[in-house]
Amino acid sequence: MVASLPEPPEIERHRAAIVRTDISRPVRMAIEAEILTTDKTFFDYGCGHGGDIDRITQRGYTSAGWDPYYRPDSPLIPSDIVNLGFVLNVIEDSEERRESLCKAWELTQQVLIVATQVLVHDRNIKQIPYNDGIITCRNTFQKYYDQEELKQYIDDALGVDAVPVALGVYFVFRDDQAKESFRASRFRSRLYTPRVRRPVKRFEECEEQLQPLMEFVSDRGRLPVKNELPAEPELVEEFGSIKSAFKVVLQATNEEEWDAIAYRRSLDIQVYLALTQFTKRPTFKQLAPELQYDIKAFFGNYDEACEVADKMLFSLGKPEVIKTACQKSKIGKHLPTALYVHVSALAELDPLLRTYEGCASRTIGRMDGATLIKFHTNKPKISYLFYPDFDTDPHPALQTSMQIDLQDLNVRYRDYSKSQNPPILHRKETFVTPNYPLYEEFAQLTSEEEAAGLLENTSDIGTRDGWQNRLTEYQVEIIDHHVYKKRE
Image (cartoon, rainbow, N blue to C red; front, side, top):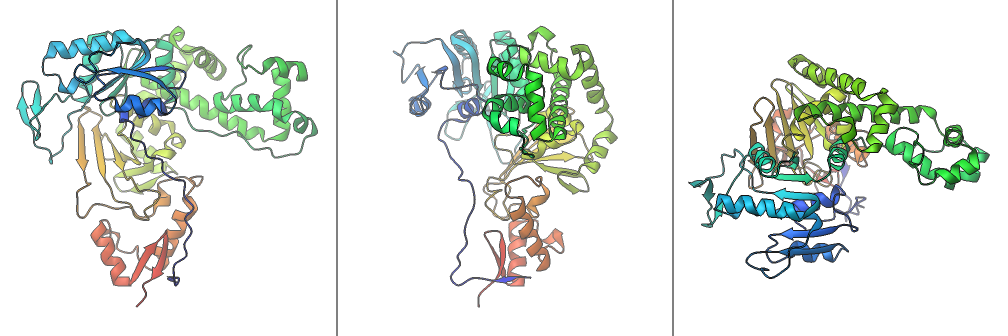
């Protein structure tokens, strides 16, 4: 049933505001990953005019920087986090380039951020070779790296194992435990503390005291070991032990939900450990203490955990395994040769698919801002698709895509931002899970479009022009995720 357009339209928008930032991409990633926090010092090596320094200082960070042209007299200050952002690209002399990387590393006390322009295969880009770089259309030198070439360059120069974060962005850690904790965190599911289901007097009396324990178990999937929880003394004094305190929590909540959290956390560790096979697997002592406790709680010992993870990883060598996992997935949009999943739903996928995606993202890094992940079922490839208006546009247009061939790690990139007729999405609820904030809104739009006959003959509506022709033919328009008859 197609509604008539209100006169005038009074349509409320219930959406979270999108906060835009002018901080550079690699620094923003460090903040989002909680690598750069306000209690750590930041230094921008090759800071240019100092835009990042000024902007993050305004946010309460302790920051400084140096640049050979714009701030040559500024002191080089050893700092927790050092940024070498898009500096290596513009240095023509290879020895000077390597020296800059090493000097930035010397200043780094915890994490070095290295970001460069990377070379991707895009038929729309024309380049002129020059030495080991290119001359751009602005007549400036740029050294373009392949993603794997960049990692090899950093590793060889610094004697490290750099961690890919996104295309052209790497984090280099001083501490092995911090590095492995960061890697593991990238494969941790986002879980929530189970809600209180039953009135229990003892729980109600001590709910505030029990909150830190509930948050800890929600985060780790297990009870804390001795001295791991700051609130332990108060809980032991009140309940006699941590176990007794948690029994009170179980009385007021559903034990099955806590079991599900533990199971999901064990799967997170399997995915992380499986992917450590692509580099030198860390020893047990190289893992952070909390990760060591997790492994002991879920698997008994490290060898057992690695064995379980390796069995899962090696099964991916059979092409039918991924195809079957995609076909059986209850999450995502199924097409004949692919499964499309919103990035927010990645952690809820079968661990086989999570590991498969990790084979790409752990080595290459995900495309910045990726909205959907495409699992190809007819070839060993993963694609990342960026739809910047996925939440707000009823039928968002594809802006960029990045395809990774898992056989040779070849990366192909395509920019649709200037296309007059880009591909668009329909049935957005199929890409996300029912707990996605806008799931009901997406599903309601699909229901209205189906009722109006708009989604028939889908081959005709896959692009912006095709969809607009369909709307014109049916004399309707889409406003705020609802279908309305056009006024005559």
